Length: 206
Length: 101
Image 1 (cartoon, one colour):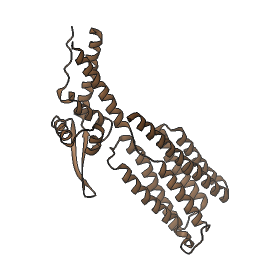
Image 2 (cartoon, rainbow over the protein chains, first blue to last red; image 1 turned 45 degrees about the vertical axis):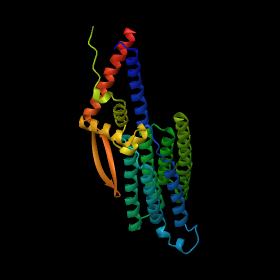
Image 3 (spheres, rainbow over the protein chains, first blue to last red; image 1 turned 90 degrees about the horizontal axis):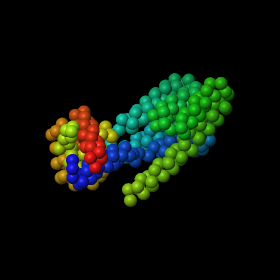
Image 4 (tube, chains in turn red, blue; image 1 turned 90 degrees about the vertical axis):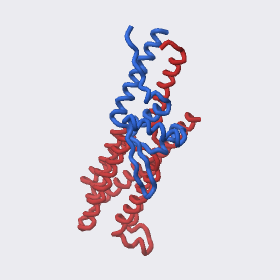
């Protein structure tokens, strides 16, 4: 290669490869809303099942968890399918998605079984939900190397441990506190980060 | 003086290189996503993807999702190897340009 244009052309090819690889890695996925949605769903289900919500429909307390969880599951499925439309599949996305799907399916089966068998009890409920959400958050945090999500995993596991040793009231309070901090506060924080990232990307593309 | 490497002509085309670079970072991608990322026209994109498919560097899957047609492109192992060899050759050529310059 002797020509200066050739050298420029090759350097341009290198820049093209780098920029396209970076484009391929960029994600527009927004997950913060799912944490907020499920956090609100847990709080609604808790309020409904505790009899804190008045009205004839809400008097069927045994329906609180199944109805709220199924509704939240459908809303999540619809939201994710819309969000993923046209977006490429990646190994990272599949790994994180698989973790949450596996957790959701397991949790649904176990909690439904406990509900149907009549062996539903606050300690057991909080211990199971805390452990499951702790595992999913921890796996996701390890894959993404995200300390804030790891902190959420620790809070959920602490809630599960407290449910094993504490009173029923303490278990309930620990569940509500974990829901507030690890679902609603963390979800809003994730949404804020996602919007910041999108703004930065917009500036970079302008 | 050592012989300089040849650049693979199938990959050297700008759009084809961009497509392979994009596909190297994902499992599979839709035609529409590739079009949005490269800013190419449907005709040109289709033609370049066909060349990559002919060379065995990408595989195509056509299916229907909720009754809408969807075309998915994946990079094959041969494509991955060819891109890695192309990048290595490019580095070697640029290295020799720096030395001779």
